[in-house]
Amino acid sequence: MKFAIVGCQHYHIKSFIDEMLAEGHRFVGIFDQSGYNLPERYAAAYGVPLFRSMDELLEQGVEIIGSAGPNNSKIDVIEWAEKHGIHVMTDKPIVIDENGLSRLRQVIDRKRIKIGMMLTARFAPAQYTLKCMIDEGLLGEIEDFTFLKVR
Image (tube, rainbow, N blue to C red; front, side, top):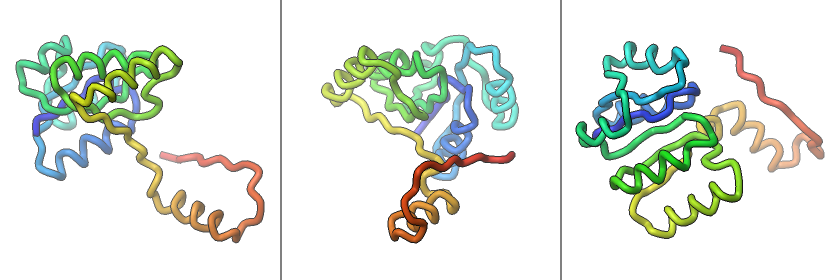
């Protein structure tokens, strides 16, 4: 499959890119208007172009989009993708309000495209082990906890 990134504002998207490449899919480029440096860094690292518009993705024959853009505009990307028959994988949250949720439900109900969500930490060793320990009751009653990641 040919894939592209629309919204490259969080490091979660690297997991999507790397997994797609590992499966043999072709990364064709990135569209992001944020002004962040991450899109340029990833475009250079993966040897792909930065697109000026989402419509340029159509010319490339993109079949799936990975999105880690602004939370308040992911539903716009999903609706655009649905219009063009392009599947979407996004980081969380997909929507941030009732209007976005209603729009997302409409896309899902039409069943024209598949939408997935990246949950990159769910099976990471530390989180998985902690979840097992909680489920087994080894830690007593949990009031609160926080995960911090050091780069």
